[in-house]
Image (cartoon, rainbow, N blue to C red):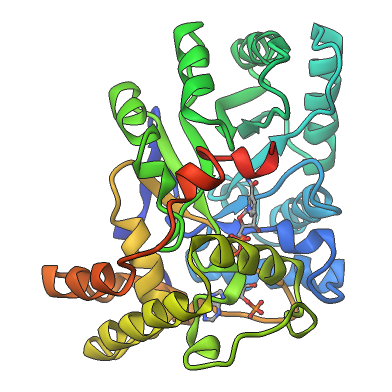
Length: 339
Ligand SMILES: NC(=O)c1ccc[n+]([C@@H]2O[C@H](COP(=O)([O-])OP(=O)(O)OC[C@H]3O[C@@H](n4cnc5c(N)ncnc54)[C@H](OP(=O)(O)O)[C@@H]3O)[C@@H](O)[C@H]2O)c1
């Protein structure tokens, strides 16, 4: 079953995306042996089912190259018009250092080359250290490159609210901030949402399925130890679940999700995804794909087959009562990468 055409959303400034972008972090290692050839070919099946948008980064292993190869094959097999239907959102996560025009232009040039495009659809910028204000220099140069036609839209990832405000106040237009956002981690609603609403900045979310833990497989399952978690993602999100309140409350959430899912003859992942897709300012829920190894695109397309009502939300809210405050223990969006 394909994603309905009506499900497409605006990320910002008229730029339309598929609401469930394909996440390519899983290509970077620690998620089983993913073959680039199989991954490239698997993207055709996703495209045929309406998954036209991909999320990647300069440091996601071969992700940008796989995308470039996919574009070349798509053009060869189906022509230029088919290539026009896909959107790629990449990231630049520079190591600390001077942010001169040359440094910034070189990084953009590398992504352009790897992805085989003349203009990056969306460049999401990441910065490690807010005490180093050179992120504002980098963004100013990126905005120049945007005006020269090398970048269509500027965006961010993992910025906290205070530093997002500094960027906005510097007059730099960003259309989105990619953040961790799930029924376990609802920090984006706490401080950042108000600023995003005011400045028409959307959220792209990750971690919405906790790397595959917020899914049927873990319902009523004994708490797994680190060696039983087979991907880096699951190990990472298990630590987040522990900080949030632990396996007991997580099982309560899974059971509530299962109860809601059964009402609509869907599965837990559908409800967990839809719950976040319905939140204010959320333009898309990025779902990680182990291309060529596992595949959930037909199941995930069912996320538009239902609507959550107030009874559903009551069940979900009751199940998560008493969780720990991640904003207090970890900090705002993205602070887990900086503490
Ligand atoms: N900006 C950042 O700092 C950042 C950080 C992390 C991720 N991301 C982006 O977000 C993307 C998503 O990654 P994530 O970490 O957020 O992982 P995720 O989307 O929460 O989890 C992905 C995993 O969920 C499982 N899954 C998907 N649909 C399912 C379904 N219907 N039923 C059961 N299981 C299902 C799959 O597991 P199996 O493969 O085992 O079947 C898949 O590998 C990444 O690829 C990346 O593009 C960005």
